[in-house]
Image (cartoon, rainbow, N blue to C red; front, top):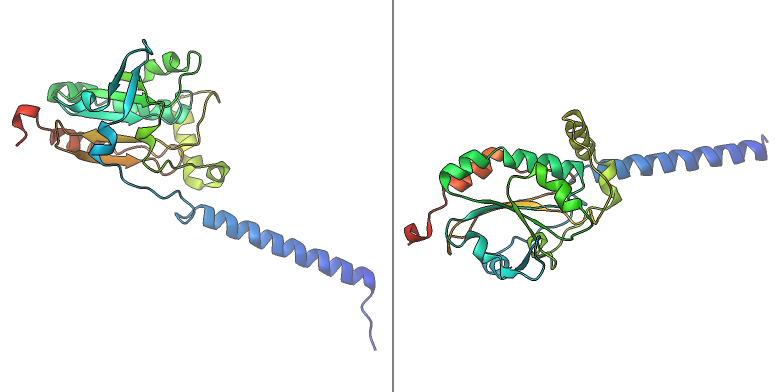
Length: 226
């Protein structure tokens, strides 16, 4: 009777383990690039957002309700994931391209950040042509705060976003919290409601500028809202 040498059994065992590990890794990468593991989103309501407490960047003692931003003329608001992130700087620049058209519509452009670290906000300001405010309670990142952890770095879409921003010449740093995902809102005046809500599904997932502008065109001035 033929007996398989122990060394061959050992080699076959290692080979089987390696194949199994490789298969598991490939399956994990494939799953990571589907929407299966993406954080679930709970849409914000106007009532939830308008009660958010914001602070002036220049004067921490100045607090006000977010509703003041859009009460009269509506607003386009970017919830910045991290001011030092080059992907966020790219999106800020993209949104800022709409500023002339938003000005013609009488719709202001604002941004909110979740923390104030050193000069990060000042360094971000050249990329963003709107006023920035501090949202310490992260209301504009909720109601259900969504995080993308290190899983994001094996998503093809994220690397495509990295490449796009790098080719465009954007750079950044690693200062601050960057895992809680941001988004963009277009909110009508008064009680007109949320006209567009774009939630970042992965790092560098930008809002569609055409959709943002079309939503802004639907904003009515407060005295026009019935």
